[in-house]
Image (cartoon, rainbow, N blue to C red; front, side, top):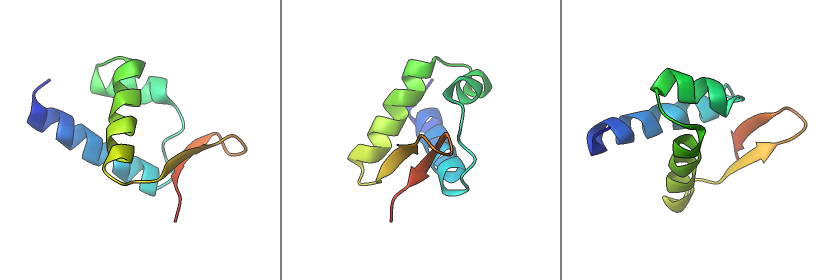
Amino acid sequence: MTYHERKEKEKHLLYLIEQKRLCSLEKVANDYECSIRTIKRMLENLRNEGKTIVYCRKSNKYLLEK
């Protein structure tokens, strides 16, 4: 995966979180043809860029805190 492809996938991952549609890291990993660990690293990169991404155990989804 090139740097450009990774940034595009991170952008789409953020879109899924904003739309409250990210609930399964396994499904996203299958869609992106990568590992779950790679998705977790992408989430960590987004957090390092200043996004406040949290996991809600009640709804089983990743969300952006305001």
